[in-house]
Image (cartoon, rainbow, N blue to C red):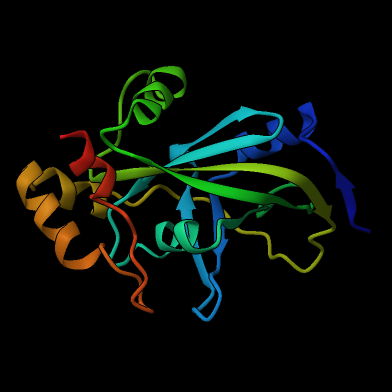
Amino acid sequence: MAKQLPALTPVLREFIQRQKIFFVASAAPGARVNLSPKGNECLAVLSDNAVAYLDRTGSGNETAAHMIADGRLTFMFCAFEGPPVILRLYGKGTVLHRRSKAFRDLLDAHFDGQSVPGCRQAIRLDFDLVQTSCGYAVPLMDYVEDRTILDDWADQKTEEELEAYWRLKNQRSLDGLPTGLFEEAEALG
């Protein structure tokens, strides 16, 4: 049932654009595996072998820590509506720091130059394996609407308050690994 491809096809790119949610999985040697749901409005398909998303503030920053320690990253998309399908993208991830040229270039090229409230960084996946599988056991579900709680929270914070939160909660992973959240920003001045 599973099919493996070296890159996205036009049909798979369209499938990604229709999804409301995707999942990001990462790991590092000796650390916990992390799996996080993400809203699709923050995702951009950069090419047939690259995607990126704007990473909103969270209670942790596991993905960034795992990118420094290991780099392995998987994105998964599931059809909760329409024909069943699961799509996974396997590859290496990198963190694009908020104050970096790469981050600004991503915003300009794929997000009309605009970030999202509380965005702390972007995560890019360069993948060399695309796998589809049946998804027959994935339930059919109706999309109601996006939640605005995180945006509302971030909109009420100043830049200084967001950075204070990131310094408190987002500089180390659950396993104590560094996330590098401020390293490039401090190097840039």
